[in-house]
Image 1: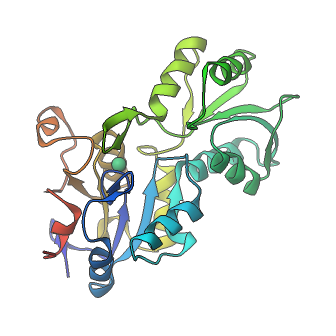
Image 2 (image 1 turned 180 degrees about the vertical axis):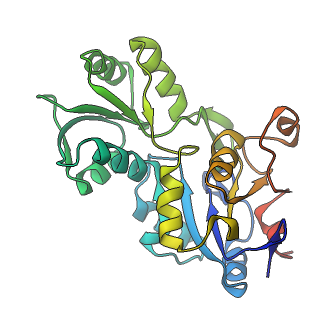
Length: 262
Ligand SMILES: [Mg+2]
């Protein structure tokens, strides 16, 4: 049994980049970690702001580390932005999509398709092949006065080389070019946490949100009334806590410190 601030924990919403791995490098023995979640009867949902990969790519990546999860245990910002766009346009239809194949595929599951002709909105996110041309075309489309949705605001993405430009860098370019603020879907906004808690069927007070980034994971977990666990294997450092509120409920060096894994 694990307790955080006197609450018995029944479920965990885990960030992945900077918590489970950096790019292809695992940050602990992931097989042992997930075996411990099972042993302690803690249900797990993996929730990431990274919108460049599909759900099945995450399932496959975990499988490569010896961990079996179901597709329903993975929630991404492409799903969150699709859910948000659907709230505004329940009938689905044409939208201007600028982002990864995962974004296009997820939007299709919600009834939307990419079109330059009469789009109802602009929906954007990071793709690894974005370039000046794609940024230009997206910004011209936003300037037509369409609603502008964007997957997630993370400024950087942790890799073994260091922190490289993330979706927030592209977001800043589009907002700077157009003067239009995007409607955001990823953490710290509530949509990913709403979907995760629905799937876990647990109360926020018995659910931990584990993340390496204060302004997305910890802020979002706090806003969702979950217990928050800050890990030091990713983007933010212990020093960053000095000027930060809300403080996390638990601070650990590595996610394996939730259990006694050696
Ligand atoms: Mg992270």
